[in-house]
Image 1 (cartoon, rainbow, N blue to C red):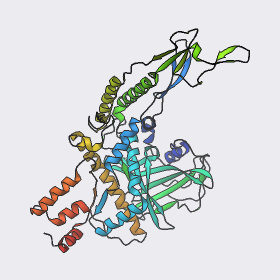
Image 2 (cartoon, rainbow, N blue to C red; image 1 turned 45 degrees about the horizontal axis):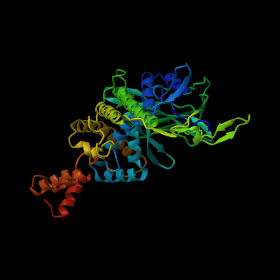
Image 3 (spheres, rainbow, N blue to C red; image 1 turned 45 degrees about the vertical axis):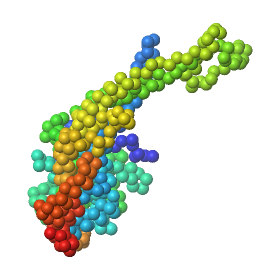
Image 4 (cartoon, rainbow, N blue to C red; image 1 turned 120 degrees about the vertical axis):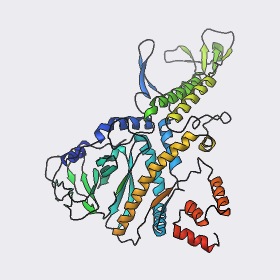
Length: 488
């Protein structure tokens, strides 16, 4: 079907349109790295599919087996950092309850985990608000580095951003560009009628508000495959969100970008572990080839084969099967009618090599040496719970990434609440926002709760503090529930 590409990258006509607005596109400097990281996540490229030459000069294609170590690394980080037990708590309990209902209704946390997986693989991801003004609904959509183009940024972060995606309108594929712009005083660039194809576009509007109103606005522009502007029905070209908070959040690993200086993009969590990824798949492919090539071979004498006439009248042996590579015929032989040959496998040595490669991969990706270690009992990779007890490197890195992720989650939640208020939702000011991550996978949460309960019993912690910490309640609600229960 038209428009259903195997992978999507920002088309040139969209880039040209953004350049015409005066924007410099940081995506172009980072795109070669993002493409390379995307290839490792998909296990594609010259390392996995290449050509080789045999002893007589014949060229043949070779495919290297893969366990997709890059994708495994990203999925592990996604599951460690976010799951359905993650809680967002505001100082105003009403806002906490509303967010919990929104997350449950829209499946935000499951989608957010996938966003983290892609962001840790490609270096950058984002959440951005999508507003349906007609039905007065707001959704949070996720994007990865291929679709994110920061427009205004500094050391403090990104304040304006464009998101480019593929949509379908009346059976046609169109490129949808949404610019999240800060409509403050002095933010004035007004390319009213630009079209990448050079023709005037219908429906003029200005991207800035010339200081008439503060807050963020969402500008939506659509192009067909030829770069011509199209205006699908029901798409609002400019929507005033009324939010003073950015209507998007950038998601990045807590790793410095050493590929491009001063870039608003992040760096893949496995950017410095590409050699380890290759080592893992080299060891895995060698082990599988060893097993395949080490199958038992059976050599049978001529007398064991039935014969038949071919098209020329000659007598030929009937094979056991064209795909059979384990049974061979000994020509002109009547002795030793059945001879078996079983090559000695070297899988133990290759397993040790694979173990070292996995340990190196885990260490370079922030998990520590033991995270991807092979359990000698089960013969497979250990679980996170088994390795977290004595893995201080993992715990330190989890906390670093959680700190960075908390800012992104809190930011999009503030914008979400602000936009909902402009659409009529009666919500108080949320106050401070904190994110309670579920660390039960890597730590003994039950033990931590028991310790806090002991401190409550000893008078070292108030019962309302316990409820605020473990149930995500604000202070007023926690004190009320604790007081009703006759606690301290």
